Amino acid sequence: MADTPTSSHTASANSGLIVLLSGPNLNLLGDREPAIYGTETLDDHVAAARVAAEALGWTLEHVQSNHEGELIEAVHAARTRATAIIVNAGALTHTSWSLHDALAAFDGVVVELHLSNPAAREPFRHTSVIAPVADGCIAGFGALGYPLAVEAVVRVVAAQS
Ligand code: DQA
Image: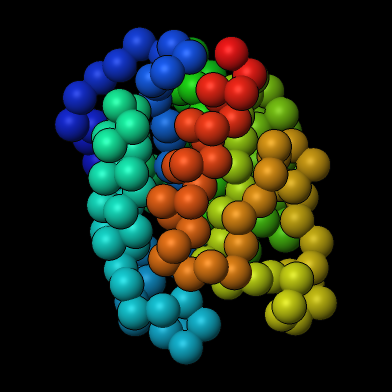
């Protein structure tokens, strides 16, 4: 499921396109384990991220999929268009070397994002195969993480230019 951007930008130092990727089961947010993931829906998080991006002159597109290959294709599509990728890969965070390799082939900024703090949860969540190909990670701040991830992208890109 992909939604459409409200405007388009050419990538540059001060503005650009952020592709926000949401992995498996994140479409159930709001309903799914609210004690861990909160009561906001994925649409709420995307809206908050988009507001943060547009306030800074950036554009944000969102892709959610429960299928690993669709997420990989979204990363491929981002290679020629996007300045940055923010990725909450859900449980693929802990398993998907294919997503790792796709992100390794993306030249822009990569921010790994989680609502919960996987390091404080079950042992299988302690390993992220995304982490080695991410510039950094925002985890454990719930809904606040989405605008924080956008701010991280914008500040990192500004610091690079
Ligand atoms: C998550 C953490 C993952 O371990 C889990 O599989 C998810 C959500 C998070 O946002 O906290 O689906 O990425």
